[in-house]
Image: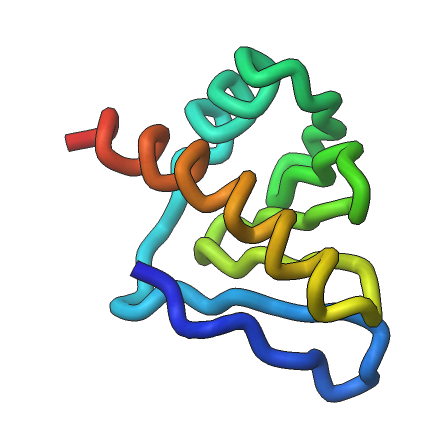
Length: 92
């Protein structure tokens, strides 16, 4: 489960923080994203998903949506959450 999206302190994006905290298996998340046709750059400690807007996925489960448009962030969150959650469920 994730907290509601909130504006980052610098105002350049929105973030979703997992609650409770979790550690993601980025290889599984990457595979799930690529299955959905989303381009992914694997930066070892995070994934950068080439979507509109761009999304950074951290090992600690944090999702950062690089847009100042709250509606675009909400749409991206709705798109990415099921993919991340399904990769997380498959770990157990």
